[in-house]
Amino acid sequence: MEEREKKRKELKELVEAEKRKKEEDRLKELRRQQEERELEEQREKQERLRIKNEEKKLKLQREKEKVLRIKQHRFKNELAINHFNKVLLRKYGLQPLKNIVAVTQRNIEISCKHRSITLLRLVMNKWFSYAKTKVLDRVTMADQFYNKLLLKRGVNSLLKACFYHQRKMDIAANFSCVRIMKYTFKLWQTFVTDERILMWAKESSAIDQNTQRLLKKYFTAWITYVKFQANERQREIGRELLRKKVQLWLPDYFGKTQQEENDFGKKQYEECIRDF
Image (spheres, rainbow, N blue to C red):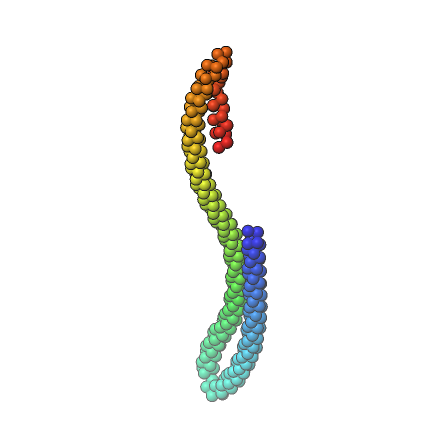
């Protein structure tokens, strides 16, 4: 029993060691995957930052080129307007000049409106880029937090599963011990019952044999007693005849009485019975 318990404990320790080893390997693999994932995320983040910086540089370059083109366009427009005003003043006088002033004013208004629209578009593009960057950063942070939360929940679930499995193993071991004890007690009860029945059978057989022996002894004693009584009667008859002869010869002789002779016969019978 102790050797079986010792083997069971050794087997249980081996199983627990194997489980701990598997758990450590799995945790190492999870940490390695986590590190690889973090490195990959870091590389992706750096790549996004590089792309973002390149886009910013390209956007700034385009804006500079655009501003330069606008300046050149304005400069050319101013030259053209001045040339046109000079030509109008030379050829048409004040009315054409008024018309030119009105057209110029309208062009200035259109230019201001176009400039306002361009500035608004530029601001909106910058705001959209900033908002998109913030959203991407928040999404990245949310993904990282979600992955950490999943890892934490996975580890907690694994620990709970290990604890539950250990508890089930303890319950199974206790149940096995109880079943073995019940089985042992049942075998012991069966053995004791069989032994008691066998003892009762042997005792009954011994009582029967003793009864048969006593009956045989009693019958033998009875037969002996019958023979002894017959011999005693024959002896009594002989003694009576001898007594009568002696009284005829010796009138003053008093032999044994009948009671004494009977007591003597009983003593001899008891000695005979005792011999059996």
